[in-house]
Image (cartoon, rainbow over all chains, first blue to last red):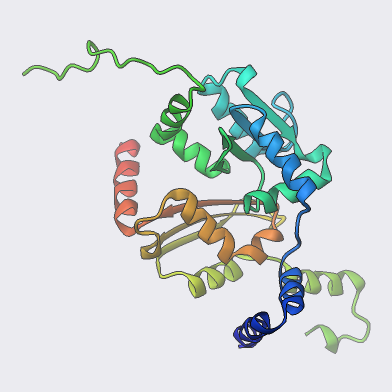
Length: 156
Length: 111
């Protein structure tokens, strides 16, 4: 009951005074600075596949991050095309990546700068085969030619 | 009731405060029902006791025509406050039709 009333009043103020618009926004969001934003953007652009995780690929600190690493491994993502960032070593990154991606949890996966999702999405894409397609189409892993020999329909 | 006791123990106070603020299956279900047209919902506590990890399976018509990413974003937004209090949150999203297919597949795998 309270919320819609508040919202409509800020909307009214927005039209009249620009300063109240700003304070209204500031109250609602915690902005990440432009500096942090560009730092994250750089991190995301550093490699074709970028994984923000808890721990490192060799020593993941969380089951979900471990699962994400394993999926990328099974898919055969070459190490030179994968960059991982340990959010546990960087509290600023840990908080700001959530806001940057508008995603509340870690791990987070980017492919060629595009946000793919978290652990659930990565796993389900892995199972359905769409992850393989995505990685192939982005040139991360080589396309596998479907061999016609194995795909022939059984003759009756 | 706690305040009927002359001197409530500190841990009792703490635990009642915790219970008021902590996320529970019931709270999550309520929040989801208030924000989605629920066709089917399963909420599971996967924390093995600490109450900080949940997994949900939501079947809703709201997901029709939306990508998995969009659906998850929708849930993330709707459960923003709750998710912020958890350690881990896992979700599966289906439209009623997809859920039927999913159940069929599970049945086949069980065979």
